[in-house]
Amino acid sequence: MKKILNRLKNRFLTKLLVWFPALKEKAVQNVQSIAFDTIPWKKVEKPLSESRLALITTAGVHLKTQEPFDMVDSSGDPSFREIPSDSGIEDLMITHDYFDHKDADTDINIVYPSERLRELVEEGKIGSLSSSFYGFMGHITDHHVTTLLEETGPDVARRLKKDEVDVAFVAPG
Amino acid sequence: MGLIQRVLEEEGIATVGISVERKFTEEVRPPRTMFLRWPYGHAVGEPGNVEQQRFIVKKALELLETMQTPGEIVAPPYRWRRVDYLDDSKT
Image (cartoon, chains in turn red, purple):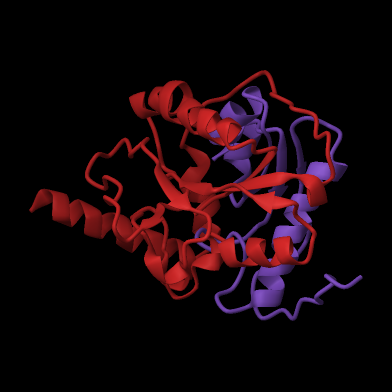
């Protein structure tokens, strides 16, 4: 019961942030993310029109047939879902209580623009798309940050490299 | 989000991200970011606004080719709704 109430509370808070956008900046003022001194940098060596691109989302997107992200653990869920890049948007859904995805539920392209990317490939602006895209859930904190940085993140990087991906587009919820 | 960019970039995959939360981006310092002062859940825009979505995706991806300074955050002044975006795909 407590878990259900907690999920309802989280969902209500996300609505408040849509109704009163100014609250958003207040809400994060005291949230400490991890700060880094260095900035990793891979030089881009090919034009986009010759590059293989992957879409990575942190909006909690996954196939309807896949296990939803864990919404009970307050530190988030550092796992990922592998999504075939040619999946129809009708086969996708969002599990994420920490942002209001009412609009994205009607058109998932606003957080996961797979249809737009396919169009850009057809127009020749992007060379090709990776065979899989990857869905994470944002809002990862505490010990799960380490899991993301040391396990699940590098796992996705290995899969992308195996698929000869050059560049990745990362979009949030 | 920025964290995933960091991991991929370190493994040799160049990344660009959209951010709707500038504070986190400044702390996490991913390599290339387009910051939009837009609400959560709408990083690419309005539902059903195909031209806007295409415009935003293209503008973000262009940064892969144009950005030269690691950690740069570009913050274009686009509005997130009730805007007709010119489709410049043919230009």
